[in-house]
Image 1 (cartoon, rainbow, N blue to C red):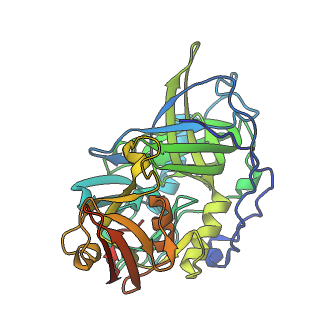
Image 2: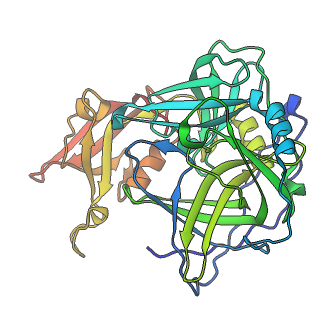
Length: 399
């Protein structure tokens, strides 16, 4: 797959408000991007999305900028054991273990979250709750287990906010100003490494790059995701650390872990972790908590079509064979699509007034919808017969 190289965003994010007024954080504009030439070398990095998931397919991430700081910085002193212990004692009570059930995939996953409010609003990654039919959370401060609902999520920024049901009096994390982060700065990562739960693991390292842009390719679905403006670190981030804090030496959150990579070039081995800057995560979380939806931010319950679709070219159709056709490859029994009459092998033609030419386009059209919204859908069956029906979207897992 070709890789588009993106320039780093150089605009400094404004500092976040104090933690007790995080809901007032202004929404930030998306970073501007411009295209550069292709890589002059190739290093493939095999990655886990920071998420432990049984049966999950491999993910490949390709960093598009190396940044001004080397992964092999020498003569740096990482935080010693005493410092790590002090930070862990301070931060652990504000963390949660996030365990999700992926009912439609007959699967499960585990990750990390950060408590934003005493009443149980929690920050984590969107990819952690993607497709979740049930979310259970264990608060590390109280050791209590809670059911969680999704307040909202931003797919493009890989950010989600959960609400723990019946929670009160919880310890919270404290945010620093990620605009002040510099290369070579000592950092500490604390998270649910390996999805083991219980006492979080603690790793140390330093910042090796700023304003990083990476492209993720899911080798099972073929979908790609771009994230920009990330902090890069050589701290040993593992599966299960998604949604965990990247901390400064004072135990302040300066980033939220979203990805980790490792791989080999001709001359060396490299590993890296990537974190969403705290100011970005903080501001988008505030937007979600205030119920301010947008093209990328979804508020509330996710609308569910109940059909898995794939463009025919993604299925390997020969050139010239209606490559824009979007084929139904899976149907949820009893879901809106089945009730409307669709079945596996049908080709989706249009949704309302929009002709459907890709699976991503269909997903984008449904992004802002909520359960109960209605659509008119048109399709062709395996015999080429045209059909049109109305359907009502149901409750579904987060996108």
